[in-house]
Image (cartoon, rainbow, N blue to C red; front, top):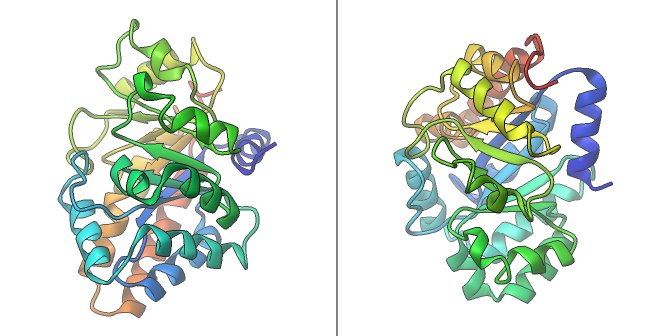
Length: 273
């Protein structure tokens, strides 16, 4: 099994949901970003999503947009993002890593070269938010052939007719976007999320991770009770933006991850079983 499959199998065996943490590569700078990445597993992150900085992150809210701009201003590139993964893997061979972002930087890098380099660096999966299922031949299917999971987003507006297309070549897990809109815009409603998770699980055996709007340990606990994982991003990059120093950024991000992990681990499981 892949690292992602192994991690979700272990979570299921432990009877709990997971915590997926998103940070942007190179935010606020490469060395601080690496220190945060290295600290995430020990603080309680089960899966790490690394944002690939991009000048026009259209699906992201102000916090993640700002994190991309900080990273780009500091010289972060896709090549350097892969180098961050490579350096992280020097000390951690188990934690799954998913690269999340937009297709343009990959296209500019070169698809075949990117997939080869990503796999060699230790990447386990991709979430490319602006490539629909109709374009699977472009990157999704080559990624699967290269040994990388291609993880799709499902949203509140993904109806019964559209859902099979979204799930067709999805692997690893399904990322359910709990609210309509940009990242960090509102808090999720756990009851509505539970109904959507049940709907997805009727047609897919994959784990369902739920993100957008989770900011506190209590919110993470509520989502972990009805899903296979809670995904947190904007709240973490917000801590980086507000930190007075690099050391403070690392400390404050990891403190929040510990709070979120405690919430996830305290959840009583229900609909996700």
